[in-house]
Image (cartoon, rainbow, N blue to C red; front, side, top):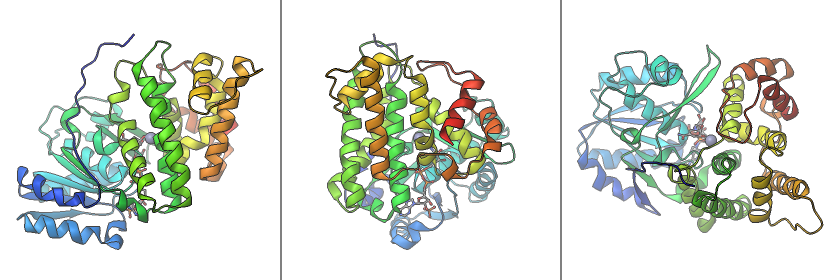
Length: 388
Ligand code: NZQ
Ligand code: ZN
């Protein structure tokens, strides 16, 4: 039975080749002083930076630049960005990049007028925004996180060895996002593949919860089949527009709150992955990949009917002569084969994690209660050890 919910997603999407032209429609709706946020330079190499600056100037905007947003953006960078935004008196933030750049832009957006320490308020205490926000628009260049159409913002605090995500409300969602699949052609294969697994993981986190008959589970199975199909094509031919465009749109739908309506979610793979990220600074999607199979094998008995359904409906496992457990395990084996085929990292050792980090990573893992099994700390340690 569907739970009670209010669904609202206010982000306007401009999708397709040359979608950047839509920036000309969007910019007049916002203020003159723009904070242009981007990462380590990929947009300069690709030429997108020049195009965006030209459009901003043509629309009479004054630009304050905020470059160098790193993957897994840090709290120190956030403090710096807030000062920069204040100095530029910005009334609009344009984020051009991947999830890190967009997450960071949202964090700056809610921090500019915040009277308290934003890290403590939003990420440690998970409090709501009670100040005026500065609107954010995005041009997406890396696909996976869904940050282009959600309120998620993940910030890393290296001093405290914590990586924490806050899911802000619809007023913090990007006002618009520009999605041109051709921008993803320049992504290094490692990033593309990490993003592909991130999409899958978002879908699975929402799928592996609940025992009711729920529309979202059917939608999720369809999205999973689509991303698995397109991923196989894109790893062979990264410039296959059909595959890249389907992947981009699937990523957006995988985490734009739609499939989460009326059902709980698990999110323990992300909690484990984020804790690994806090220790290793590894690429987000790869941290998820490294823990997923050990985690799902660990909880398989607790959610057996759903794991069986996953095997049958997503992986087309032949059930003939198999017990439910054998069917479910065959589904996870098919998933592991697919992961190896597209080239994700299958263990934590390859991400720089070492046995002496396990206790610390376990301490940094938030244990959530929405999935099929509420883990104990000992179980977290066991899963992490099995993932090494
Ligand atoms: O910094 P630049 O030079 O732009 O390079 C980036 C970066 O090195 C590069 N890149 C991006 N677009 C490119 C490109 N290189 C060539 N051509 C392009 N078109 O790719 C690298 C990775 O980018 P990044 O933004 O870090 O990746 P991603 O989109 O995976 O974002 C990861 C962050 O998002 C958080 C993660 O935890 C992590 O901090 N997440 C955010 C979520 C949300 N908002 O809902 C949910 C996710 O589960 C996730 O936790
Ligand atoms: Zn993710």
